[in-house]
Length: 358
Length: 87
Image (cartoon, rainbow over all chains, first blue to last red; front, side, top):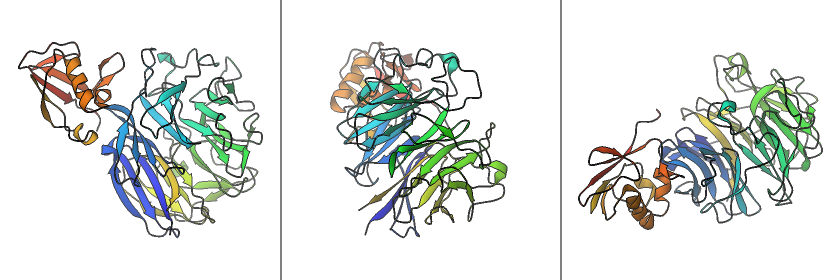
């Protein structure tokens, strides 16, 4: 019988939540990765390996790997650097396994790849020459931490084609494995002056429908957006949501029109509005939205969810999972209709991913 | 041979790495190279490109704050400290 494995990256290590197909009883394991801050943990379906991007205050950034569902781990950062170019790698914030290799998005902005299961890395691109790149490493332009590449979205069929987000700048697409890039931000909104209309957009999360590689959704700093042409153009679909701000987003595995988001208060708190927790779902590609809160705390729940903090499994009736800044993991096994807390008192959660494993 | 004392945070990362060991090296930098030979990846956990010591890694040679270039004597004591950081 297959298992459902939820990988949770936290401020103090990586944790595993494991259940069977029914997803009723969950067993928690961890912390792993020597309790390093883990920004993103992912499962590689081709090899069964789990990878976790960590950055220790003492020992720097490294990628951890487990070949036994998280029981034991090794780490390597060989090649995970910009050399003496003047660029400094402070952390890896996003991991993606696709087409037999592993991608890592880094701060300062760069895309790395590994072709040997995370043992060695090389930089594929720093997106030099792209609009915005001339100033994105300028200290005057930095948020807390540093601008980086938080996510890389692969194309399901074409290994040379993928999309990278540069924080505060926008989406860039490559079709030649990182040799050249094109900004893909047409139709997005910015509530601030833009020097170049091609870039300057604050894309928080980009997801693709597993049913249709032309159907993309994004949670932006200002608004939810949908693309039906693989990112060439974007249409805002924020109407009906309580706020236009949020980080996390998830696509339904079997329905291209169903999509989940977690709207947050756009102010400094960046928590769920009014201390009342909810996930929002559209079943019609953003024309209408439903609030899903059955089983979620509705009072005094001042929780946030970060960009990699929500995941959707691929069961016939999909499960939806999210992890909070205050260390709870909530799960739904009925497409978001009802929820249950499956872990509490974890360190602050940066990422939640889910895999079905043998 | 210099005597090297390592922080406990390193041992779980490298199989067989002791807390205390002797190294034949003329500088701190060389001492780290010796350990890199035996435990590949060791240097990355203490140094950034440059190379320079990571911000929260402090090295003392005979109780004096040191850099990678600091010379080691035949019986130097080298303490590598994971400095107070985070919460």
